[in-house]
Structures are given as structure tokens and as C-alpha cells.
Image 1 (tube, rainbow, N blue to C red):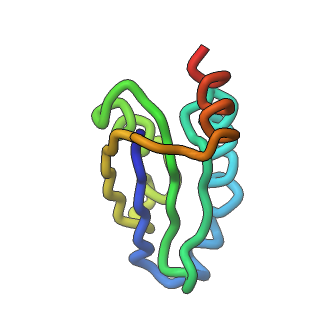
Image 2: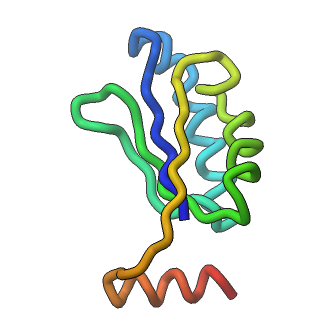
Length: 99
């Protein structure tokens, strides 16, 4: 699993100009089962995406499609982790996604 950390590097009004296409990008990868949860940081300095993918390199390619990346609106870092514990309902959801 991976945590994708976005750090906004432009004023929010510039970011908001691309929010619609960013949400479409997210929706695409939710439908494909890659993205599991996402949202804004508080305060609004960036965002977090929890994802599953075959490799960090695969996620790097996916991120290149994000309008926030294409227009250089945010910096992205990817952290891979091995999930060792999870809430039972989350485990059930993950099991369904992995089939």
C-alpha cells in the first residue's frame, strides 16, 4: 500500500481552477480500485491519497496524469508501507478489491 502526499505550491485560487479535472482523475482510479481514500489536509496545504498498486513506479506513472502534477500545482511524495493491522471491516473491503 502507498500514501501519496500532495503539498500545494501555488495559491489556492490557481489550484481551484483545476479542481474539477483533478476530481475526475481521482474518480478514474477509484473505479479501477487503485485509490482507496483521499482528502484535503487541515489546514488546506495539500492532500493525501491512500492507494494500492503493483509498485511505486506504477503510481508515479499514474500521478503524471493528475492535473495538479501536469500544471505543477503540487509536489508529490509516495511512501510505501506494508499494512500489518487493519480494522476488520477494512480487511473485508480490501479482500473484495484484491479479487
